[in-house]
Length: 185
Image 1 (cartoon, one colour):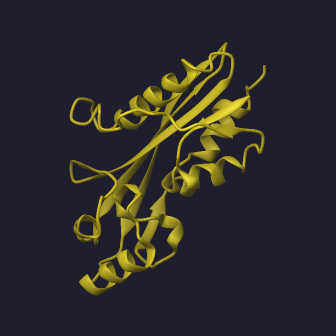
Image 2: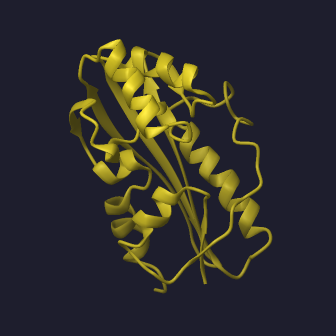
């Protein structure tokens, strides 16, 4: 059985592009455990390992897939805002700038373990304070790294480089190539 170790509804939807045969079990770990300890470029992969190991310890004969995504801007990791004020502050920081979105994933089966990171680049448009407040009120991006969802199609983004699905939260193309092409072999 394939277990998706995630509470993200976006990951659940994206995984359906690869398989419909899976179940979800949310790992109970402190996602801030590695903050400030691990290099930001390595952080998503390391956090995905923590999630995968937590579930694999309980289900050692199953396949586990976990993922973590961060937004990296001007030397700072932008996590998930906890309130509207923080979301507005983050979006003001992102306005008119380039950021890197990094997803790390871990796949564990009884015979294989794969951990990889995928990077995409997002270029924000210059946003007015009014646009930012309207976006936060309308889309409530509190559970999203960087305080936005690229899938919201709210006119925040100028362009992207790399995987759209990665920016949403699960690097489908990379998973297809490095995990789903070898599963069961």
